[in-house]
Image (tube, rainbow, N blue to C red; front, side, top):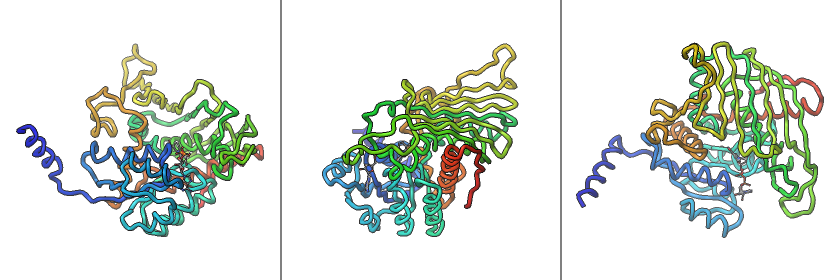
Length: 399
Ligand SMILES: NC(=O)c1ccc[n+]([C@@H]2O[C@H](COP(=O)([O-])OP(=O)(O)OC[C@H]3O[C@@H](n4cnc5c(N)ncnc54)[C@H](O)[C@@H]3O)[C@@H](O)[C@H]2O)c1
């Protein structure tokens, strides 16, 4: 009994800064990303200190009443909607979170902004640069906070790489090379919205490539030109809607070379046809003072080669376990070495957005906003154009 009293006192002390605002969440989609984002909203009040906002999980939207009700019960939402238009009328929702497929990004997200709700939209922002620009224009006009869910900015090791680059630890940057390899496309039996331009926009490019394009922009800066190839290895699959066979009109893989405004050059590559590669999202950066390297499949480590900091006889790459209390995001977690996982990136990401809403500051530059989503789509379009026309394409933004 005395232990219980002690616990309550500690709890009261921990929140001594006073009550935090509540932000009502309306989530579209309850499969892969809907589940990952919902897990983040649930975990934030438990783990994040100081807590900027208490997420209130108001509603989950899906099209099948039975399935969405089951998911809402499991994730902890108060109610369900079968139509996002109805959900956007709900005054208890202040943040609309879009975890739908790419063809369900623009219309609901624009409508949510027009209804005055802050918006979080999964990547790629739109299916094309044009669609993404419409989304950017809408959030700017509405004056709401906007985030595009490039969650790998929220890996502690990636943020540590960013910190090293910001303080010039690598000096002048020469190379950025990134690969995002998965294996699941290498089966003719897989049928998904991801294989068709009407639902996905592009293929491995927007799905996986968008992530490494975001890494390139986040860590190195703006690219000025690209030259690319795309390939589609399996050209017909089952229609995910059950309407027989359907032509695959998106890329299964792409290879691109890139020049950056700061003079660096790089390569970007993504495929769903790399047997044995589960989620091989990696990059390496080479600069005049050293190199850094990251692989999501070993996400708590950053490999560094900084000869200026090491003794001459212990040079070469070494693996740094990015889990000290001084490392990014680690104030929320465990004693050093008690590592975290992929789902934690979404917790950091969503919390960053809640802080921006409550503090009324921008999601950028550390979070990706709709400017980043739009620019990413411009680069994706340029890669497709370059591959189609067999020439180098300049990157030009109109934002
Ligand atoms: N950040 C990441 O690491 C990451 C990983 C995977 C997917 N994604 C992105 O997340 C988005 C969703 O991908 P996913 O893998 O979760 O897809 P999914 O197919 O697993 O889930 C899509 C969800 O949207 C729902 N939905 C579809 N149309 C709808 C509509 N009209 N109204 C309401 N609900 C609707 C489906 O029922 C489902 O719950 C995509 O844009 C994808 O590119 C991002």
